Image (cartoon, rainbow, N blue to C red; front, side):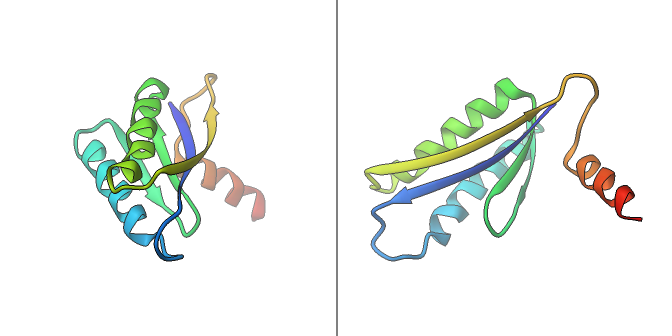
Amino acid sequence: MAIVDVTVIPIGTETPSVSSYVADLQKILKKHEDEGNIRFQLTPMNTIIEGELSILLGVIQEIHEAPFQKGIQRVATNIRIDDRRDKKGTMEGKLSSVQRHME
């Protein structure tokens, strides 16, 4: 199970706002979540996706391509992968571990 931090940045939008592009990506992610392939969480600055790495890489490619479908000519996608193999990790598990150290 891997956890991926991903930010898709459409370059050359008509306005400074990119929320409509983010919404499009969230719809794609929701479809994959409904199919049982991933779990995801939108944050103010990025999206966190959890699942099998091979599936996540395909999903990342799909969301990277989405702005091109709306006429954007350049997209920058930042990806950070946490792929721990000694135990199953989840988004909640990572947060719980930090919170235990704060008590």
